[in-house]
Image (cartoon, rainbow, N blue to C red):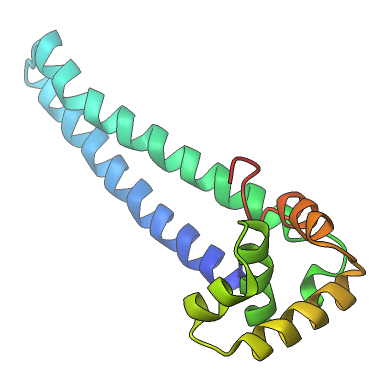
Length: 140
């Protein structure tokens, strides 16, 4: 995961947290004014669900960021990282070329350079590396 993407995600999450704080304050004010237990539950349940979703999203982003510290990962260009992810997802060179709208020869060159930088020698190694670096999930 690229640093600026991670930074944007954290900024977005901070804004969401501030929104959650406002919603909690609103619920507390309603509670002080005599909100019933059922009304309080109806107010807080959606808040808890969205908070849980946000926490999960942040944990996944942090995990990917930690995985991005895999050996030599920083040496890859953005395009090589895209090719790495697509190879790990099982795409063939022709499919990668179509997906990225580049020629097959360009895909082959990106693949060759990426594998050389990472000292990888086969597709299985690329896939293992991509999973360990957090570029793709193991379930892909």
